[in-house]
Length: 369
Ligand SMILES: C[S@@+](CC[C@H](N)C(=O)[O-])C[C@H]1O[C@@H](n2cnc3c(N)ncnc32)[C@H](O)[C@@H]1O
Image 1 (cartoon, rainbow, N blue to C red):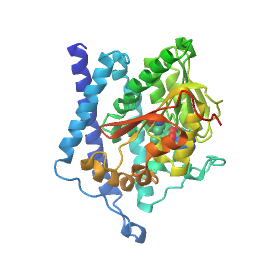
Image 2 (cartoon, rainbow, N blue to C red; image 1 turned 90 degrees about the horizontal axis):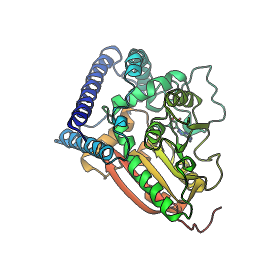
Image 3 (cartoon, rainbow, N blue to C red; image 1 turned 120 degrees about the vertical axis):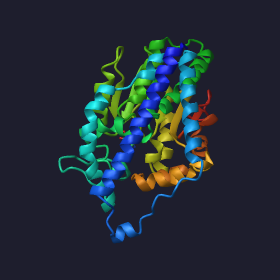
């Protein structure tokens, strides 16, 4: 890869990290000034975030640098075009930023009241699973309004100091390897247009965007429960050339596709927002819709013990943000769940703050029920 691309990427990442940090510091100061936590009975029993151990930030920064090095490396070895490294909706972020500030006081207020089941009166909450009807991250309207969908990408980028997309892109290499391996086992390997990939809980479609960049001709599908996030995904994905990914509003626990339909399935940053039983159902559902020999790639938060120096951050995360299932997820045996569903050849690895599971549906599954 040429030096200009590398330097531009590094400068971009450093710039985003600096802007994110500045925003977080300012937002904290403003919150303390205008919305200090009140001394209430509820707040008295609340856990408070613990300080990070000495040296944690240095190690965390080193892990982030390693993530960026791999991101550059994967682009350099042609897994995906280098243009994906710069796929940043800057104009949208600039336009959204003032709205983020306008939304913050409501977030602080909900956190102070420990209120996380609040939706605007015009939002229809019928038919959603109970676990879903929450203000995850204390965000206004949870996942159920267009305003929430508009703010989401910027909020995630700030949370991860600009590294969220680089973490998402780490699913691309194993997914591509899985497709290549599957193609070699088939008597008639599919032409690129016959490759079908499904992204579970796709949100605003960031992962689909990267999949489209890597596989311009594949048939892409995305499922999410939120009509608002799907609308946003549809608008953003419509900007891209090529076939529009097919989006569907559904619960990932019960996917509305026939058995053995996809060569690969992905799921990014979503399992931690499901209770254990729903997590298992989503994994079983992914197994059902995968072709024998197909690949399932999960990206989510690292878990307790993966990176001991970051354990305190994992404990703090659900305290600072409303993440009701994260503590359970952080101790969950996802590998065991994958095996229970029937997956084999399970590999795990981690980059920066995220962990990955790559699993294969056996070429000759015992049962296709
Ligand atoms: C933290 S966001 C992750 C979105 C996206 N994958 C990303 O990388 O940004 C979680 C997403 O999962 C969706 N979701 C949560 N539970 C779901 C379920 N049971 N079925 C379908 N979507 C679900 C939410 O609507 C939301 O879009």
